[in-house]
Amino acid sequence: MTADGTLAGYHAPVSFSLHATVTDTDDNLAELMRLSLNGDQRAYATLLLETARLLRPFLSRRLRSSSEVDDLLQEILLSIHKARHTYDGKRPYKPWAYAIARFRLLDHLRAHYADHLRDAEDYDELEEILPDDVTEAELSYESISKEVEKLPEKQATILRLMHQDGYTAREVAAKIGMTETAVKVAAHRAYKILRERLER
Amino acid sequence: MDDIEQLVANLSKEARAVQAAPRPWLLGLRWLAIAGAYIVVALAISGLRPDLALQLREPQFIAELAALLAILVATALSAAILAFPDLHQQRRAAFAPAWAFASFALLMFFSWRADVPPAPLPQHNIECTLSILLFSLLPSAWIFYALRRFASTHLRTSGMVAVLFAFSTGALWLRLHEQTNSIIHLVEWHYLPMIAVAALGWWLGRVLLKW
Image 1 (spheres, one colour):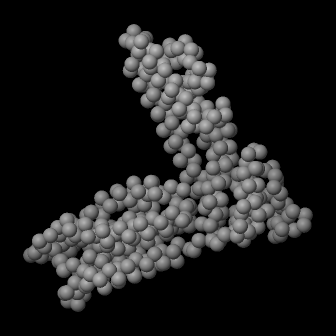
Image 2 (cartoon, rainbow over the protein chains, first blue to last red):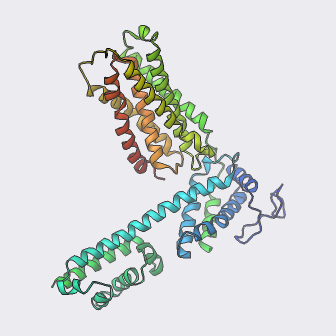
Image 3 (tube, rainbow over the protein chains, first blue to last red):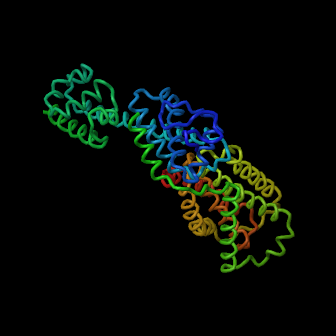
């Protein structure tokens, strides 16, 4: 790295900003990784930022919310960090980084759909214990919204976001600043209360 | 965006020089050497089959050993390639065991056709499967441990190939130890269980190779 922040042998200046104009050709990224493997922290920071810039559009095309993209991008960068010893700098960098990104994306989507499925199962369970006249009239969030509003505020908000607005537990967690597990626990407690009230 | 910059700052701060993993063929070769040493030690303890010298003059036996060895080599190399997130950009080589297994199946088919009159069945049957399984336990544990030090993005396939590598180590040992020539017995109790083992590896990969 030269004194003006340009990587020796590079065609363009390298800087730490995500909006930098680093040429992200495979050769440059591979060179950055080679330097990183030798312990060059500046090169490593640049590489990670460039990788984030490279992967953002790839993720944005496949995920709905930008917060989801950000979360996953962080997970991918962590994975790249963990797996960096599996890259030797002698083969193209992008296929290696994309392979990790795809792997984490699939994991994320699997968890996302499993989450939806679990929520749907909880809702189905609730549907089963409802009195006949209610089920005949087709259960919807609206039909039990009065009962939902009587729940403690946090539980009501969680159910509203999950069943009225269609967010997943993870998205709700990010939105209201709770952990995903805490959201799931709160939702389960809410289902339990609703079940008891509706069974009466 | 701020979170990402913060994360990058943290990760780069703790980044030290890292030794890159060896190339897959070298890694596979190491694993093969260890498996080879394990077989040699096991044979030194359990003993070679008494008619081995005679059998080594039979082309069918030689072909079967060669095919088993091919499976062992192919699964070792494939496991090594699958240990890398991008398959070391040698996707085709990762699926080499499929060819090795196809050749082996073909060889077994021709051996069965040529087994006229059929060689006498041994007194035992499932004991062979159990022996191979027991023999494979150590290589299985070891190969999973070795794979966990890498970063596979094909967890199920890696698990399956790893277990097949371990099982073929066991199959090769038993073929050199046990005096059996019945193709039906070999197929039924030595080689067909590989399918169940592969299914187990498929599941184990997802469980044990997560990172």
